[in-house]
Image 1 (spheres, helix red, strand yellow):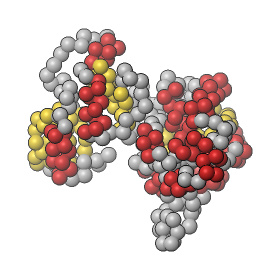
Image 2: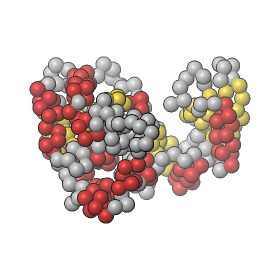
Image 3: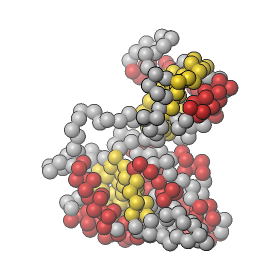
Image 4: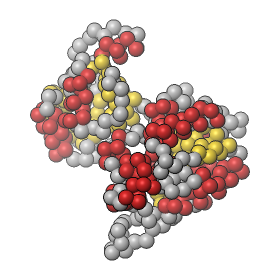
Length: 347
């Protein structure tokens, strides 16, 4: 399989040479990608990455491996890779949130010069929150080789000397593996390259085709709601429910929901795209659901929805399955259940 390797900040493609050698020995075709945060913008480097993938990788089956800032380039490129997504992504010590180190160093002129625009974006909460995650297999490797002491910057928190494990995993801890390595050298860890090789082996048949046991993979990539007023619907989900909005064209709105995206699209446009008539009202025969950690959170969310334009159709109440649940509809009538289910995880 073609595997594109993207190095981190302050490094060069040479830093990925050992990983490249291990991948090549396993029968893969590693491709090195280099960039300079000092002399390039994020948009420029991302555009070159996309062009390299289109030119040199088999877009029917390829994987991306990024280290540190390289993972930000990968996530920034996903919108341009919509029809040719990688089969897998491997994130080595990725900044999944605006990390403390970037926020601290972004105040100094030398960092601003050397790290350029990309380094400043690493310290921007809004930018980091809006970066999408790949809809395909993804693995995060978080380093734990950094020192721990109450007087050090990370205190007793597990870290790789640059990022804490919490900063390297964000809200995607379920996708992560902790590795006893430092940030700068995590790509040299046998645990990392052996796991990457094993994961690729599970995705590839002996003849090099993507392994897929089912005609449809068990996941939902996108939920699209056809709305009557795009501006009103966007305001409800962004301001009332405070979902992280992604950069999108003015004709559609995307929000990130973990590994699934929520899309808002004018009802007529969605119906035309699906080859259906846009007419229809009332109960649509399905409900979206959001699980929370406690019954009090059900009532709190329903109260917030009622205060900013939604309609509570069923107040929170105990259920016959041992939980607590209520329902509301958004301004376009889409039904949401808010539930606390002790036997089902909230995420």
